[in-house]
Length: 254
Image (cartoon, rainbow, N blue to C red; front, side):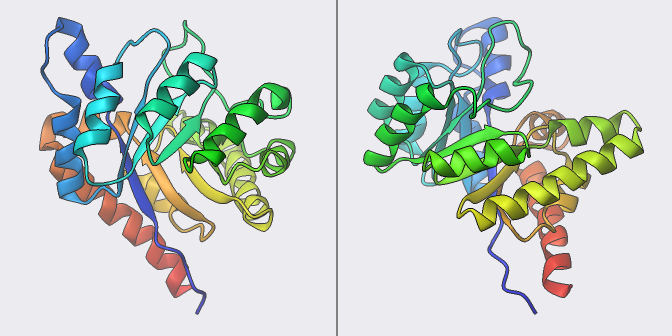
């Protein structure tokens, strides 16, 4: 029976802040959501501070770092301003992502190969500060290998194309994207990288990907916040945790 690493759940609270910012003011409070998610079983909290501050704000990151009892994963573009802010906040981890002002959500993986010269100093600064770095990338061998060369401790595989293909009822494309994820997770682990995954995951896809033994963390946000409107955030976190546990049990039983 293979030894399998525990699977962590990071809950992304960006869209609690989206709702708050629609009217201004202080409610609903992202910190309150983070505390509720942790109480229900989340292993960490993820929040993306964007250049345009469309959801999470600087003060949210400071409050989260000061108040939550679990690791804070600071999603960010690798710009000088964001690097400065993150080094000031001192989160447990940063996840470097591509960012375009006009996009609704992160649309693809970071081009680590094309941006290696600009990414290397930021990765080195975070490593020196004891902040774990993950790179949000597609399951592409060249990107994975470059992440290892740049000494990023972890990668987060972009699962959006796979999830979209399932939603759009495109089984051939979904199967192709799944093969890429499986191969990418294996390559990343062999290169000494810690493997995370996220983007577009729901209960069913989280259960499926949880069966990959190389993956140790899933970061999930938008779907869970949507479900929470109907059943509450605590129940949503518990249901996601149960789906992940079902998937992980398939590895242990294999």
